[in-house]
Length: 430
Image (cartoon, rainbow, N blue to C red; front, top):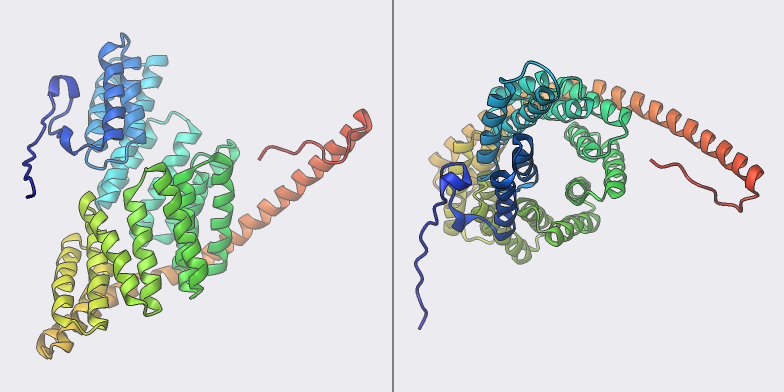
């Protein structure tokens, strides 16, 4: 006989945990351990600057999207109150920097929720507290670009991504360079510049390998998989998707990333009509998306499962999944997701011979498709400018690379003259 267990909430003591609505039972073990360490510093440190450091570190390194925004808001209010107490000096600089960081995180949270105007306002306010910190500015420029990209304003997106890259290279900082290059590559992929996108992703991989940036590498591997999927080079695509999953599972850092790559592998098998295998990957992705409550992932996975059922002739089962996928897509409001789910659902109703319902959904799909095509036209207008900017930057990078090689070669020759060193002198640090 199976035992039945009833799990209740484990509400946290706000006087210790600082924020409301913390359910300890829903926090993963590693996250909870990191949070406890940060709170221990807060409650034992004497100086306010020391107290806040642990919480800032926790916010920056947490993957729990239901937890870190609450602590980030707390950090923001704490820093805002402290900043108001100073007009100048090192304490003013510290608290303004903390304010900038927390505002940047607030903007990122809004961006993930699709609240683009609020995201942009938070990022722009964050810039006001940077005080000329170019590395902080580079990160904020990257996120402002993300807002413009989400709004299909690709000209401004590329402008801010390139401003970010310029500051990162100027300061020889690799910490987010790979990620920013990934974002630029994604735009070129979206514009159909596949070869340019592949080259930029490979650059991003090189930077992230130097840094040991597991998450950045996993993103680049996943996106390269998508590019090879687009080219119908399925074996190559699978290699990169599996590389992405392996890295993320080893680091146990990003369940959403693992599930996304699983879904992408499902797409590869579905494209080759290996439907049973595709279904295994789709269901595995769906289970994770549901556990972490990632609605767009849930909608996409349910649509994909429904489409496989439709191919297998199981129309009633297909409708169950496709109806739910379409409902979630409409709740989210993402045009492309709605368009895809409406078309899939239209096909299902056509199979059921519910032609009136099928036609209504098809018309809705066309309406959404027109909206997507309008965005595509904006992207086409940006394509030539984007290609020009890439080629101009590549020429500059190539020129700089040649210059560095010349300097390195001269240095090697001098070293050989002075020390009679054997071949294979010291290389430059990139």
